[in-house]
Length: 421
Image 1 (cartoon, rainbow, N blue to C red):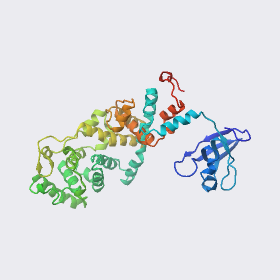
Image 2: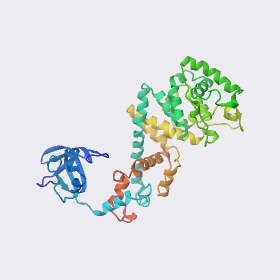
Image 3: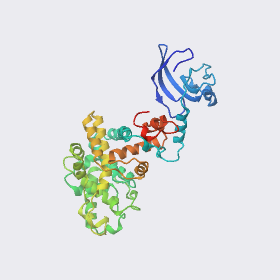
Image 4: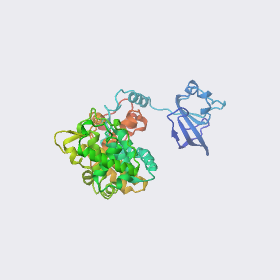
């Protein structure tokens, strides 16, 4: 780029892209004739749009140091009456047409009819970056919990894991349960599964009188109540409301009663659950650790006091994968980042690569677009791509979108895409 005096303009830092009101880029740095300028950058197709959009009357645009346009059709001034440095950059209109085609495509995946024409290695390289981005995005919420728990990784993991035992329908009450019953209390009873069950069921409000009317004469239920009365007094526990739990429209194996018993089995792991996860040598070890069953009472029950056909209530491989993908592996990665340990981070990514691909509406959309993957490593990356780029039409920030846009309105034959355009 050059200014009106034929001085070369060098962009030292493009600044931060602004999605809200105000200039398009904040805190940019440019160099003109040996002088460095710092400020904001505004971009328009025509220079006259600066006035048409009312920026010439808005003090928020007074710190614009560079106005970039494709057609410099008018001199423009800020609210102080100072003329803006405006530079004109010409581009092939077919790029713009291609971009418009993408962002106006009604499909969730705007490039679904064209992405298959790109080299799969190029796509997978972008997916690698997207997976790391997805895991990093979770860091803020995890670190918030970490801070709330006094920098206790065991407590943090307990809260995050418990949340996923809710399987969406009961996510909120499971979160409330984990907050009402600290892991430090459970840790003291790690060698007694029945006491952990009493603590969990009692704090969950499931031992409230009248909640399970058919359980009034149920010995197991009454024993839980007796045990919880002792423990709740000892630890000053305040149960959440039992009516918060949802049973409707759930398969019986996913009833919160069954899931809480399975959670108790997991939490009664000797030696500390999170430390055993960090020490796991492979995905098989992790899956074995989470492949727990509800206590024997639940072999012929789904709710308290009502018998059902006898069947062992284990977590199931699909549930185990959900726990690993959404709770366990992200926390391993974040733990590695926190301690600046790349080996732990790589271990987390390897675990994801050893879990089979997820099946949901998003992954089915990608499959229809010609993108088939073999592990959760890539399905998690595709979810990130769909959620953070495709649905928000951030095609200009997506490597796939940029590649397709660079090819212009009419794509060249896929056989010619062996080299970068």
